Image (cartoon, rainbow, N blue to C red; front, side, top):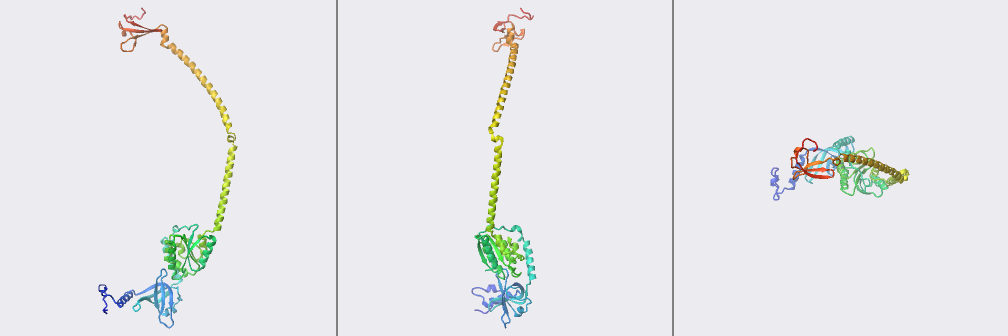
Length: 424
């Protein structure tokens, strides 16, 4: 293998299967790239401290509080011994140092020269800033809270292994509703690995269609112990769940951020069990009370309707329904007789009027006039009906006439005219 190292400018062009880089070249370039980062401040939790007597280097592991990532750290043992606040596994710290790549082993570590413990005041201030941020994004909005199922068949429980919180939830829920089932996920509930484990368990239970509600339970503790439950990653994971989440962290005074994001906040794990699972005895008593109240209401309604029917039956119209018909029948008979009499009188009166009018009509009619000796003279016009003769001028000599008298008519002809008007 050639010992000539490729130049930085021609590295990409000279590297090929025929001209591969030696390990030393790669290690050197990685060391150069990491060295460009310079000195930085890093925050995390100490998960391991290894200080051997007589050595000049202490080895630590710094872990991210939200995800499963860690970094090797080296420092002088004096930094740990002389720290104003004792540094232990689980301490939240801020370190200042520079990343180094050890070409001999191909490992990266952070060589620190300053370590500052994060105090309670700073932690609380950070929690308040995160609280304001999440509230501004609407994660605390009551309108986003989901209703808990009345009677869940399966409850998801995330808690510490063999913890008092687990015992409280299981015992109280079992006494209240023995048929309830649990999907339990035991995770770390404090320390650097807690957040990642809780988020993973939360995602697993949320994806299980049998789980109808998830309970996140932990007993009380210090502010540092409850820090994982104020982590932004966990809060956003709870908000993203499609299954209702109940937060039961610590005791009543404890108020981590997950309490605000969860759909229901329980004061204690025992309170969470009471909120999630109904009390069988109380529900049976309530059902019995409702049944008794329903039966009493039904009996009262039947009695009230029976009284109403009795009142209706006691009324005269229902006690003797034909009495009113008989009275009306008699009245109708009287009215019919009165109507017949009125009609008879009216018909008789009108008959008399008709007789009088007929007599007058007979008197005034042409037959009566003819009976008194008068006649009606009509001129016979060939091809048309006879016409009444009204003037002597209309009947020249020779005109045929029809003379109608009381007992018939005669046919005559005009012999001449006499305008004197006297009888001839």
